[in-house]
Length: 63
Image 1 (tube, rainbow, N blue to C red):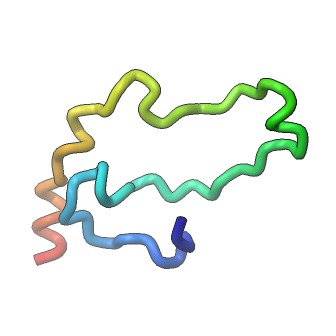
Image 2: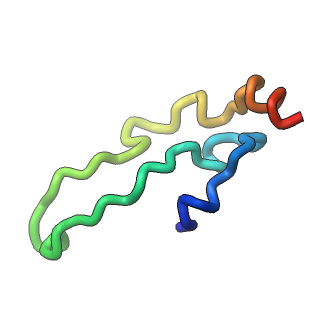
């Protein structure tokens, strides 16, 4: 994991390489390995098609 301050500003690579979600990581409770806690999984139902695409608008801004 990298610091949020080091995030990519020009998205030239597909989403699966360069993530676009910069929400800070939330800590789980200390007993998270002992009890079952609900946790959101980013691509629980598979990778979305948009993850393989790069926004043309972002490419125009980067040029």
